[in-house]
View 1 (tube, rainbow, N blue to C red):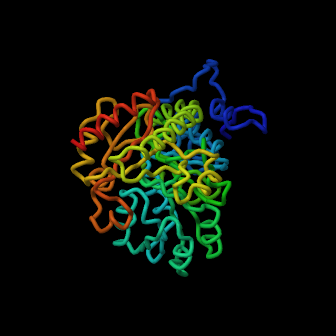
View 2 (cartoon, helix red, strand yellow):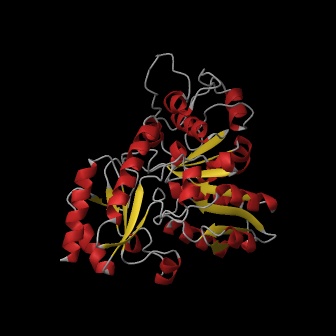
View 3 (cartoon, rainbow, N blue to C red):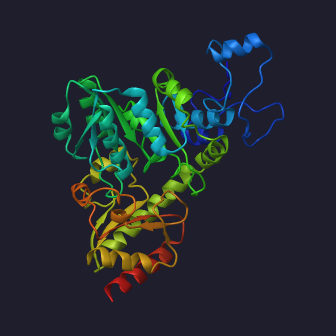
Length: 400
C-alpha cells in the first residue's frame, strides 16, 4: 500500500495545496522529492509478479505510476474535492484519455460549441471511429437537454469558455447528464479549484491543462483528470498503461510546486483582470469587453455563485476595425507577451481567430462568437497601471 501524508482530516484547501502528497523519504526532505526513474526495483520475482498483476499496490514503471506524479495527483484531487486523479502529458491528452477510456463506437457526446478550438477538432476527429458529437450553446440548458440521445454517454463543458468567458450552469448540466445515465466532464482550466470546484456542483470528472494556472509560470506542459478513484482506476488507468500519454515526473514536480501558490496567484490575477476589464470598457476603440466579473456579463450572477465571487484572470475584448485593428493593438505591445498560452505570471495577449481557434472554419468561429476583432488578454502579475499603459499604447496605434 502506498502510504499517505499524515494530515488532519479537516485540513483546508490552502493547507492541502502545500502539504498533500506522499510522506517524506528517509532523508527527511522538506521540498517534495523528484523521482527521475523509468522503473522500480522489486525485492524478488514473486513480488514483481504480484505488482505487475495489480495484486499489490506499488510503483512498477513510470509510464503508469511514479511517486512524484502521484504526489501531484493526490494534491490536485484534494483541491478539487475528488477521491482520484490521473496526470497526463498535456491538457489535450487528458481529454483524449477521457474519450478513449469512457467511449466506444456508437456512443454520443454533447459538447459546448464554445470550448477550446483543439477540443472541438479532437471530438470531431473521433467521428471517424463512430463517436459522434453534437455541439450546442454554452449557456442554453434547454439546448443541451434537447441534444440528448439514448446513446449519449458524455456531456463536456468548459467554464468559463475560451476566449469569450461564457459561463455554463454546472449543476443544471449535471442534472441533464445524470437524468439520462450520462457523465458530465468539466474543463476547469480557467478557474482551477482556487475559484471553482465542479465536482461539488455535480460534475463527475474535472479536466485540467496543468500547463496554465496549475503551473502558473509557463514552464511545462501537463494535464490531469480528477474524479472518483473507482472510475479512474477502472476506466482511465488501463488506457494509460497501454497508450502511455504519461505525465513526466519533472513536469509533475513543477506543477506540484505551482499548486502551492495557486490560490494566491489566481486571486491576485483575477483582481487585476477585473480592474482592467472595467478600464477597457471606457476606451473608445473598444467595442465590447468579456469578463464574468463585469455586471454587464450575461452570466455574471451565475459566475459569482460558481466561482467564489471572482471572474478569473482572462479578459477578452473586441476592438473596432476588425482583424487589422486587432493586429495593430497586439503588435504595439511592449510589456504583454504575444503568445497563445495563458495562466502565466506574465500577461499574455493573442488574437484567437488566427491562433487558438485558427484551425476552425470561419463558420465555426462565428458560431462560437470568435470574431476577427477579438483580442484575449490573460492577466499576469505586472503592475496594473503598466498594463493599462501598454494596452493604451496599442489602442492608440490601432486607431492611428
